[in-house]
Image 1 (tube, rainbow, N blue to C red):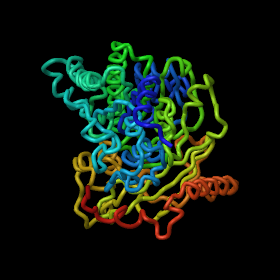
Image 2: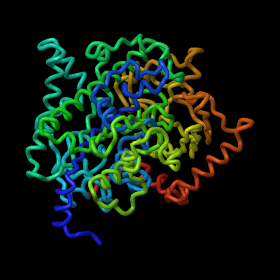
Image 3: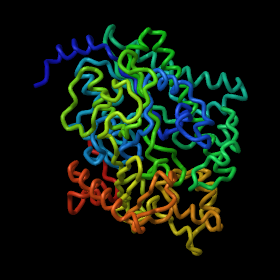
Image 4: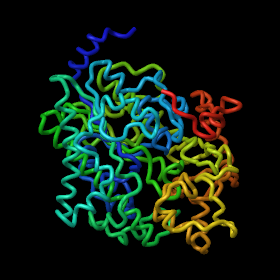
Length: 529
């Protein structure tokens, strides 16, 4: 039985643990703190992220953090509710997502318990109603502006007049202003829960901005690119521009840390930093179950509770953050959460594998933004990731994983221009964001050295995929059906299917599956409030 509201509020004041969650759109596992745990060829040796590194150094760094779904709305549905994405109703898809208000979300639960809650920028969108699990417009703090969401474009535009650093300063002032407005609005003595959701790491960003704004030389990326991407200047420049946006996010995080320090509340605040999935516009990244699509950075800081220098190797799913926030603030974990609190890991003070049971994660996806040519159908996938293997089931292997190619190889079809592929996300392979990399690969797809990589990223896939991560970190050789791997595949398949059944995944427990029918599939339905 729940305690009366007044008693819950009193308990919240006594606990006095604030929550600051910095959650970047499309930010994968890119931060300098990871470099020391990786080989010299890692891209993390190039990036500079002093603010994230501070959180990790003064708290805990997770080496194996994964998203529940590599698509923003389903992932965020899970993070907010502590449930697998398929347990969130229409929150399980991106195109056509509608929030089910009967599902408790951790911020609204904390608000009931006496917390002052607020958010800036993206929490839960493009689902309807916008940012509903965080209170929508009622709890939004963005009057100082939100040009930060187009960081490289706005800095590039202003730099000729005032200089690069001053132009960046205008972006940081917005972050400071919005967070400041939130803190000023908070009743005195009331603990807070704040979500900062920058979108600048989402496409599109200014081409060449990685070098122009952050000094990232694209050719320094040579020899560091994943094996499934062409190691050419255009792709390296695209990656460098993305890394520049990651550095911009980190600089904004630094503004929040400084503001908390000024308020004298830095050490009273549980700070958690992460992203909702991997890089957009890169084949096998966002919308894919490979590591580049599902692995993310994750660090947490709370002095007196989290020992500085904690390094956690357990495989964790970031949907575990919902029960973590509930437990950290002294509140009961909400009924219906499939996720497990990370507090036992954070408070262990240990290094390495802490909980032997956290030896796997389950990830998946349904519909992202497949358009009418695809019949608005999903590309359903589920996977289990262990330390040694990645095993994927593609439930509908006859469908295109990145969306319909729209007759691109048909000589009678109207040609699609290079510029359209860079700028129009709905033109071809619609589940891969438009980008210079996408355009380059499509236009060079028939070259001998590019074709195999193009097929890996854009082509149809077999029903099952199995990768030995110890020998093949970039998932280049599918071992499913290969001699000597039958027992491994059988074991992982059985384990995955048992979890899906236990967690009542409609993809395996329903026939017909709801995800194949309206409103989860097919033309979009009018949104009913």
